Image 1: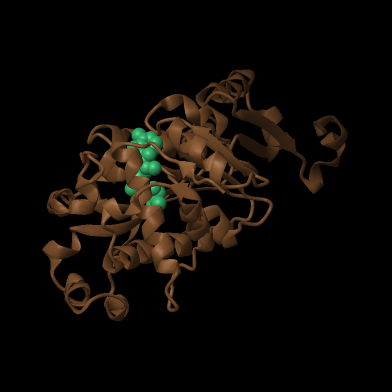
Image 2: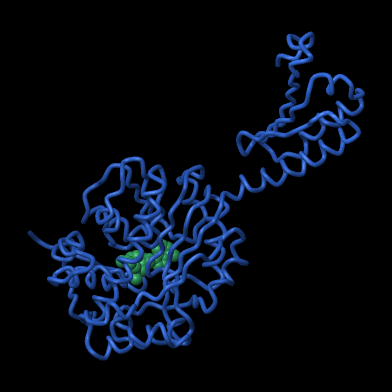
Length: 363
Ligand SMILES: C[S@@+](CC[C@H](N)C(=O)[O-])C[C@H]1O[C@@H](n2cnc3c(N)ncnc32)[C@H](O)[C@@H]1O
């Protein structure tokens, strides 16, 4: 069978480095990633992989990084079997096949149109897997992504290719669109980008690197809601035996020398549903206002909030009737303090002792 001719350049061509590295590592008897799908894809691609000069050290490093991101993703999906996964700058990575998520999960692979076209040719369609052909920095593609389910965002080998002002904006857009979840990615300091730029493998593609992440905490400010919960080196001493003695030495030193640690690391962030938080905070304000309005009363007054978008004020019917009309109207006006879409329900409950009013109090 004739191979699939591939004409990719610059940052798109770098996906051939990663898929080839993963394929090579998977051919090893001690393979960590066991990515037979990458191996099969590489065998079907008509491209001179030798020009990329991917050696064993690089192949193993790429597999270690991918495995760490797979493990984070699998752990998230084990807790949220109805989640969505956004796989940004997916290239030809076969994470969805490696992880094989449960049927309740919807998976979105996002990359440039030329890359998605190639994915379609190389991989069979899969239920609940969606391909989005767009630059991740174009805002429109998110419209196709549900914003009401737990979300796992995976960006592997992507951040350095984004413009330094676009990356944080993308993260902020994701956090405000999605209903909470996690974002995992690899990140490189300025020094890390220098190392990558100097590698012959990278230079063979003509790609350019832009976004260095020197301090991941800065992303918490840039994308409000994002919280860094884990920061780790992909190059742990336990993997030293898989690579050459010199690379193994670097692996061992990596975690002990802070400047080296920042060169390349894996980050895990969490974020909450920002709309639910906004509703909850408005609801709290409304509840405080309600309590102030009815403050002169000594009867119990309470707000119960069975869901993020509803605030229910509960008070004995006797109390409700005892409040003058003006205060009742004031309480009703509190509804306007809730964000659009939220509802304030006034529920007048009856005390056991107030039996005569029970029928009238029914809502
Ligand atoms: C080094 S490859 C990594 C591919 C894959 N994530 C992996 O680890 O095998 C970088 C990928 O990022 C994609 N990419 C870079 N900038 C992008 C953008 N603005 N929008 C979408 N994809 C982008 C490239 O097309 C390429 O597939």
